[in-house]
Length: 100
Image (cartoon, rainbow, N blue to C red; front, side):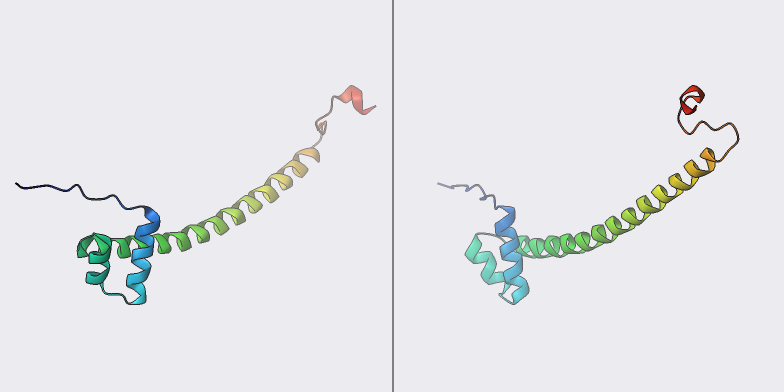
């Protein structure tokens, strides 16, 4: 009788651990056998791990850039508000009766 075994789903933590062990030098074949995975799966874990690391660095750079843009925009808003307040007839956000 032919029994078909369903592959065991591996957690993200286990996949990361396997990828780290491969990057440390443990052979892909050894890791595959020890963890019930194919060599292709182990190689996929390593590639995904590396791609995730790259993405983390890219998104950090993007966050810094966004922060700089927000600061620049806040400064520009402040400048524009000052210009508006300096215009003739400006009420500075108050009704003219209140400024008396």
